[in-house]
Image 1: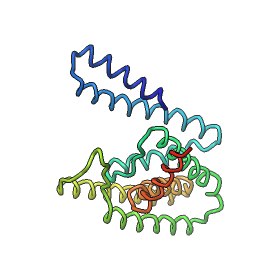
Image 2: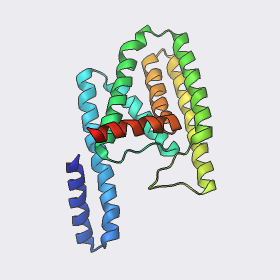
Image 3: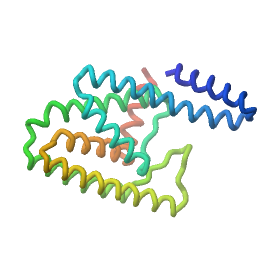
Image 4: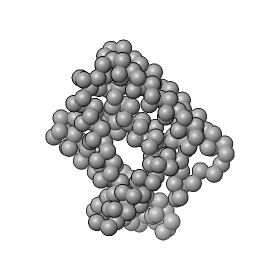
Length: 207
């Protein structure tokens, strides 16, 4: 997605010029615009594809849950925006399709068991691996590590309570979509997830 980089650089350069800022500030502005434009493009593509496939609601739920939990737990980052967009879209659409078109076949007991398994597994993984930092933004302060770990666990608890309420009202599709959003995020902080995404990255590099 070179146009995202070009837009970001042009806006950062113009803003730095107007504010008479130096090169370091321009780099900060570039990162901010890159995140902004990247999120907008990803959102537009997700909305378009999910509406086309009739899976807008579960796709939105999955993305919101994944992104919000990621704020506390961290996770894997691809080295380019294009790879991130491709993989995240593929996983989101796949799980949204499952949530949308299979929830009618799930019994309440099956959804409850699925919720329990996801919650227990996710809690264990968060305790063991969260927060997962990146090479460019390492988390080395022990206090910060404990803080983000606790926040991620508390947020998982909030999602569990929300799922129980949704399940009480027989909103199975939402519960399944939330569970998939949590699983995608948890997978991104585990060694197995990093190994899988590194493999995907290497395949995309060859392409």
